[in-house]
Image (cartoon, rainbow, N blue to C red; front, side):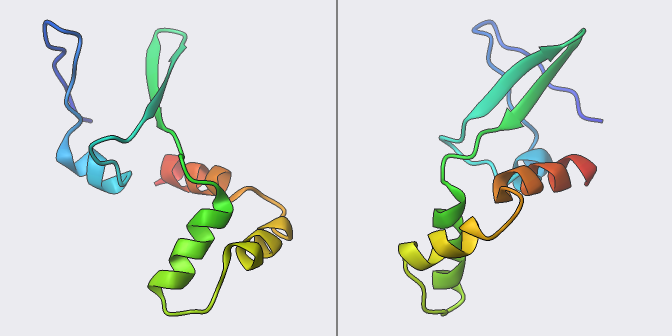
Amino acid sequence: MHRVKITSKGQLTLPKQIREKLRLRAGSFLEVRIRGTDLVLRPVTQENDSEVLLEYCRQNDQEADLDKARRIMSQVPVAMHERVRQLREEG
């Protein structure tokens, strides 16, 4: 478990280990919820699943375009960002 301190301006710094695990960087957004007495922070995905798949294909030298990525994602029964969220919560 990590502890963080809230500044006089209401800011906090997430430990580097957590930022790296969740792939958060400057400019990333977090969704904030209150669950009972717990404060829950969840990364907000700004890219849609098709764009994530397209970027993956480009990084791995595979031919792809946005239309092809959208066709592939339309055949996946679960939204990729939801599955990633589940895996992060389990890990």
